[in-house]
Amino acid sequence: MPTDIEEFERALTDCVTIAGQAMPDCAMLSIALCGEDDIHTAACSHARAELLDGLQQATGQGPMLDALDTGKSLTVLDLPSDSRWPRFTAGAPELRVVHCEPLEFEGTLLGMLTVYSCDAEGLPDDAWVALRITAAHVPVLFRTALGAARMREVAAQLKEALTTRAIIDQALGIVMAQRRCTAREAFDILRQVSQDRNVKVHQLAASIVEKVSGQPPQRPRFEEPPQRISSRRT
Image (tube, rainbow, N blue to C red):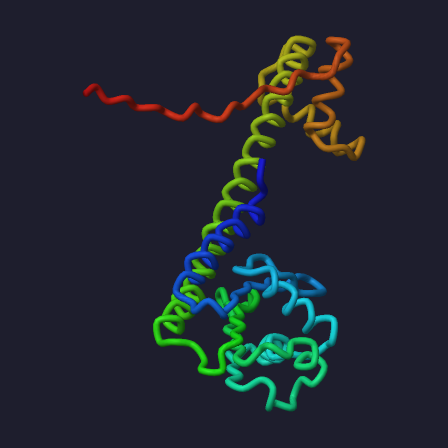
């Protein structure tokens, strides 16, 4: 099953592919995401774009790295005549135009959208429009992926809570039968013993069930609801 980040990066690839259709043949796009200690290319329209991202990291200089440092967009219209990144420029003599657009989400820098072009005439107007639309769409994709991850985390916590509750209920039934007491009194007994032994209530409950039944308590299965398939008669 793909992870949320894999689904996010797959969506980024689709995004770059669509934006690349508005670019001239000599233009290449990449989306690089910030990690804890580095930045990695998550999607690109050409393999060369990923190599150019890597070249900047290898040389320690380049417009993408400067844009990441400042958090502001950066446009280079004549790279060979620009003296700011000599090592990067020497490794990419064919490049003429580089534009870096920061990708932000709620004030946090996610990464960088970069377009590389070998055409000295730069990019046409529709290419710039495609870049702006793509840069605005990436945070939307991230918000969707983040929301899905949070929902899955909440669902996992809920399932664990229900499982824990089910095991405690099994132990309560045992204590009620042994002590001939109410459910509330049985729970007070479990809570007091858990405090005395410094163990969690659900762990104590599991040990009680295992001691009486001779096997670990059965964890209930919580299945995902089946997807409803609707059919239409023609």
